[in-house]
Image (cartoon, rainbow, N blue to C red):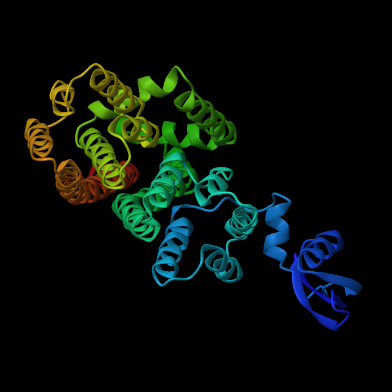
Length: 407
């Protein structure tokens, strides 16, 4: 992809020249003929003018765009459409300024499809990064003539999701770093420091205490089997991750993590927050409740909760209200189901669901705060305890020997 220079004649015979972006000469000539220009000479872009990111994206060599890039794209598209910029022109502007190669290539193809008469939602649905929720909301915005408002809601919705994810990652980052560094220190002590003490003790010929013997065994084990343990751990981790994503393994794992103290509550409240906010956004956009629940089920990562939402959807098709089947789910708070019941009665379901989502988000923040306060000191005490045991085990024989000699 790059800017081609060209020269040609209009239908009136006037000689003109210019520049235009195109993938190859064939695409350029086709585009010029569509503009009523008969090209006579074309000059390919120089190597400095080629958009390397777009080329790599078209060849499949770049990583997919994530939630962060999509949120920025959505926010800017909403602002431009709200300002009265035509969709095609807005997409062209976003294409030129986009830095992510994969999203840049997707925006280009979306613009081409829209220019050919396709709707924006249908054009987006062809690309992997735009999920069912995103495309259905865009479609609702197009049908209702409120695309700018829907895109604005969508960008705020994704920003909230990204905020919750970053909070969870931030809460686990420091403990993770401490664990890795502490584990490395303990490994170095056992593999490199302990053997030196062991040789000194063996030369002295004195009796080795039980605690020292245990540390020596651990040192010998790590020194002899680390070369086998590393590939073994890697293979085990790969097999576990594969099982965790499998059809049989995922429900078992999801059910297990939901029962883990604090972490399980975080998983449940996080998924329910995502569910209620997604449902609120869908309903406020005018999407039917049944269709909204269908899409919500696909956006939930936990298979157990997704299955329960599918059962809720089925019961609603049988004539029940939303609050009734939700009240039978054990992990769904009674107060929340009552709030939804009030929302149904007053006709303000989307507003009530948004309040419920805010409530769940607040609880998620509280759980993260508690976890941060509990995990950090626990890890420090645990790792510090191991280091202390190793040091005591190594110096204890020396102290005992010094005491025996003084007697």
